Image 1 (cartoon, rainbow, N blue to C red):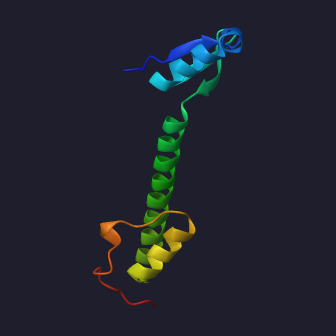
Image 2 (image 1 turned 90 degrees about the vertical axis):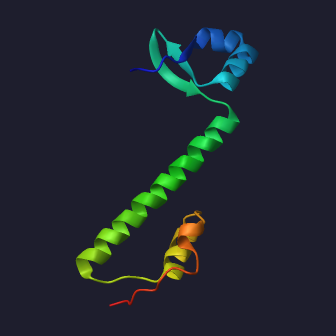
Length: 107
């Protein structure tokens, strides 16, 4: 099922900025120019949620890439090294990366 988004024309956005901002507080607003979507307006809170989710998904993808590489090479890194690598990317591990995790030898 396709989601129905709020829409506003570029002209209405320019003429009624405060109304557009109020709409964005309720959810994403697709900005149309000549009936074609050109941009999406979101609240700062929604943008922060999106950015946080993206960062988490990128970290998961990196972890899966490392896991596949380690499986292929039969080499592993410690949980501490994984935490450090993720921290460099701005992602801080939760309980699944606790210090109680087992250390596997490095090849």
